[in-house]
Image (cartoon, rainbow, N blue to C red):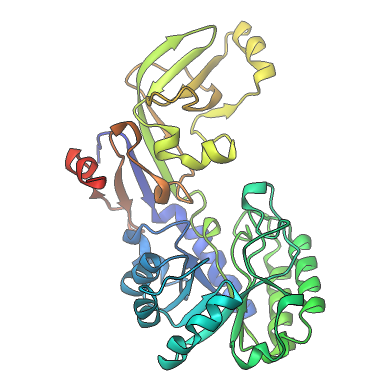
Length: 381
């Protein structure tokens, strides 16, 4: 299939490895995985994913409704703060409703109980792992979850389960295991009286080399010790390396460094690259540090800075050494853009929104959605 760039290509054949590892953990440990829709909500892949996952978890009403309608299975509903007008729908769509604060729990618990839904509360374990301050959920003054010392007596008379979300891109099993040790110690009076426990997302357990068997044993131990149904909420871990952003080189400019201008933008189509300042993987190219650029150019290597076409001066994907010379009209492929990219795409500068394409497990590719001027016009009307 020949598509006009830019476009996202979701490839189930590339997603399969993560799905199989998720299913393996579920089978061996008993812990269920629910897809974190805040990370990936392209529902063209849901029919494939739901064979491996138990359901979805959401951060808003719209995500909860999407999970209920398009994924089915279990639907967990969480929000940093629900509003009055949202709760009637939330309790319709969700099996579990998880509150972020004691105030919200008190305000809405009756509505959840009336619908016979399970009530959860997000707890702040005060331990965690994140390489970025922006995503450190247990930072000082964090607004996310309730500390143990602030919990009222007999809280488990009100709640059925709890959620801890304390990791971001954590591929260190020892770190996770130590967090669980700390949680078991700090919440020793709470855990025996719960029926379920969510450990949130941000654990990179589908990455190559992760000790899955050790993870399974640790999760099984936790579940058996307290008679809990344990949940994981993989987002990035569900879709890692599954999706590409394909772009075309529109121009080459020179200012001591050859720069490629492509028909997409960092802020518009790979926003996390700009926010977290990392280099996205690019097929046929390798990262090069700023200190090594001049030497690589002197050696005649194919060094290019890859930039977007918005007017933002910092619209730069990164600088790479390519395995070939790049010309105007060539296509480039960013190879790992499913998580936190497609859900954040926007119409800044009014540039063309990438189409969404889907390749199923049988290798059949189809265009799911194309965007046009009317989408841009009506988005802010």
